[in-house]
Every structure is written in structure tokens, then in C-alpha cells.
Length: 271
Image (cartoon, rainbow, N blue to C red; front, top):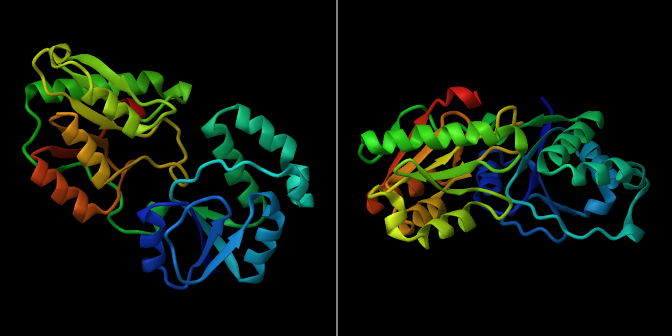
């Protein structure tokens, strides 16, 4: 088994991976925030050919992508020959949305001879199991809202819209779009209480059907719990084995203190 490289973005996940695999090489990119320390190499997106050569020279055979990564502007004058050849495919994929771009990235890494792994394959207990993780079990109204939200996400799944939905009293209060989970939950927080039909509502997070979980697994964490609590929701339901719980102990503790539930469930339409 060859060496592992962590292509690191921002957040706690790359740090946890680095701690669990201290011999791994951490690769960070110019213009992308990160928190990892230790054996770190810095590279530019414009020079991926040089990065792949460096990984091979370091004995790397396995790669994991972790953390949030923005799309920094590319400097055409800095492109290496590898990126110049890749540019037409890259531009086409960027027009196709996040799913198309991630599929291309995986294909490129694998074409270069590396095995792409998911963070959940390298960290035990990272994903939510099918169980009530904290809080009181959802009541009848919350259960109905969970089912409704899962049905909405199933219907939207082919359209690459988002991975989250909030439902209260059977009404869809918000769907996650390009702006992300925080924007969505803040929208719910600012929604007039009378629109909830007397129900607190639930936040459901799930992977899109066919989503490659190696590089794009949905996640919740302590910040999610704080936003759900601020929005006045009863709890969070996540797709079991398809959603990561980042900083698990802190997330569970925060939910307990806030009085909200977190439950892992199997959603048949998204399996």
C-alpha cells in the first residue's frame, strides 16, 4: 500500500485525516484556506502536472480530497503543459456544474495512476449510522416532515440543485441551492412563524442519487447545529452512511445542549 496524499481545503476534516494518518503528505493550494500542519506541500491549480510529478516522487499512490475548496481565479499565463492540454475539458466541465467538475477531477487523478479514496474510508465513525444519535425521537409531525423533505430531495436529485431541505408542517420552507446550507438556514430563521403551520420543522441532509461520495459527501457539524437551533427547528435528519458528522463529539454535545435531535435514516429514493 503506497503513501497517502491529502488534497486539503479548509475545515476540520483535513486536520482529522492528517492526525489519523501522520505519514500522509498534505497538499494545499494557493488561494485556498487550510488548517493542516506538518508535512505540507503547496501547489498551484495552474500547475497540476507538476503536482502529480511531485506526488509520484514522494511515493504517493492514494489520494483523498477533503475540506471546502473555493474556485480561485486561474492565471492563463501560469498554466503548465498538463493544464494547457486539460483546459478544454476543464472549461466544459465547469459549465456543467459541480457534479461534472468533480467527475472530471476524479477521472484526471485516476488517469494519472492514483487511487481516489473517500474520507469515510480512512476515518472510522465519520458517517452517520441509521439510529437516533441525540435527542428525543421525532414525533409524528416531525417524522412526516422528514419524509416530505426526503421526497423533495429525491425529486431534485437529478438536477444537481442541493443536498438539504427544510420542511415544517408539510410546507417546504427552503431548499439548499448554490448559496449553501448556511444561507438556507438563515432564510428559514427569517421566515415568519405563521408560515410553519404550528410545526417547528426539520432539516434533512442527504446525498444526491449517484453522487460520488469519495469527493463530495454532504456533512453537518457544530455550526450546522447552531444554525438549526437559531432557525427554531426541531432537529436534523441525515441520510445514513451518506452524510459525514464533522467534529462528532462537539456536534452531538451541541445538539444535546440546544434540545434538538439528530437522526440517521435510510432514504430509499436516494439509495
